Length: 133
Image 1 (cartoon, rainbow, N blue to C red):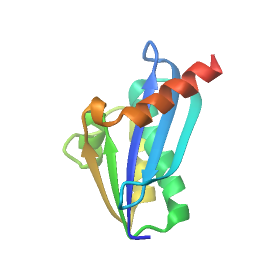
Image 2: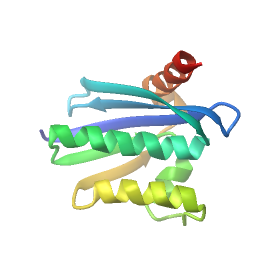
Image 3: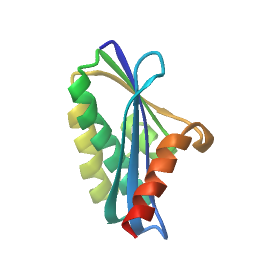
Image 4: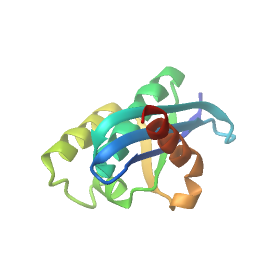
């Protein structure tokens, strides 16, 4: 596969609180090739954002893409992954390192998008939380 486009979202109600993740994988023609949602228990919004990206990169491995473009609506996570911000929280640092380990040796990029451009992943997060509670 050439390029894989990934949209992820993670969210927690009451932050921290019941949390879920949502992942949408698209091919280079913007055709959905896979979606994923999961309730992850108690977490913060930022933990959920990272966990969604970890899961997305694990799913991406099955498609053997030459290039991966990741889109998230968490500006903090994107700036941490792009090394514009330091990751001070030890729990987030571990999750950030998991992402970077999965991304190593890959042609990968991380981009911030506004929430309205990430509607499907956001919908999956809310479905996962609603179905678990």
